[in-house]
Amino acid sequence: MHNIKMINSQSVLRLLALTIEIVWANSLIMNKAKYSPKAIEKFLKRREIATLAQLITAMDNPARSTIFRKLEQLEYLSSYSHRGKYYTLRSIARFNRLGLWEYRSVHFSRFGNLLDTAQAFIHDSEAGYTATELKDVLHVKTKHALTQLYRSGRIQRDRFDSVYVYLSIESQIADRQRKARKIHQKRSSASLIVANPDLASEEAKAIILLFCSMLDEQQRRVYAGLESLKLGYGGDTHIASLLGMDPQTVARGRNELISGKISDDNRIREKGGGRLAQEKKRPKS
Image (tube, rainbow, N blue to C red; front, side, top):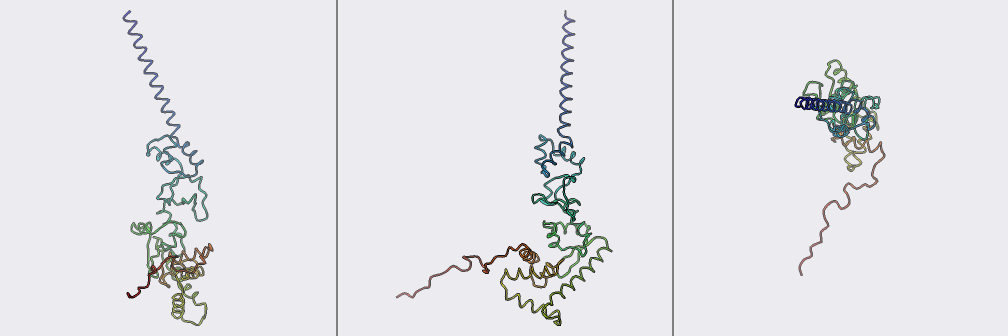
């Protein structure tokens, strides 16, 4: 009788162990399916872009490292805007001719993050880029990224018109970009002499500066934007240097002209600006 009880007890233990093993195996299978690259791919194709937090929630809260391991098995991209916060798949992105894609104000590049994108654009440029020029193309601030690229030896830079122009790290390409930038500057100066071709360059500049001194803030900005549009590539930088303005102010004037969003109000100050009205003091009788 005692032996029969021992056999039954051992059978129960074996059955219990087998059950636990089956449950554990099923759990592994379920987790493997739940955390598979295909599950992430399906989620991203439905959403198009997502943050890491959204991916973790959708996959039922796995570890961050698990998500990154699965992403590495896919052709994924992180945004070059929003500090790389958003993710998508290369197959989802619809790149334009520059290799850029914007979705709901989030920007992606076929070159990768902001540093890699900025380096690629500079390398392929005709005459290098200033920080403002590259910002107009990428629609994000680039100054810190360009400084980081320069300090790490991934690009070169030279001063033109008191503004840094960033060039390819390859010497032959950089030399060609310098020549193109200098030729462009000469053409820029020549295009400003529109009233009288016989005027010397310095005389033309003096006339333009005198004209600008008679304009209010908005008019100066819009005029600078107009001259920048005439010059085309690099116009913002050149006009800003000539008129003593910030390149971003010139770019703003240029964008206002293109969009047609120019205020009809000629005031320089907003309503209520200036000193508060004061009562005249009357002498005591």
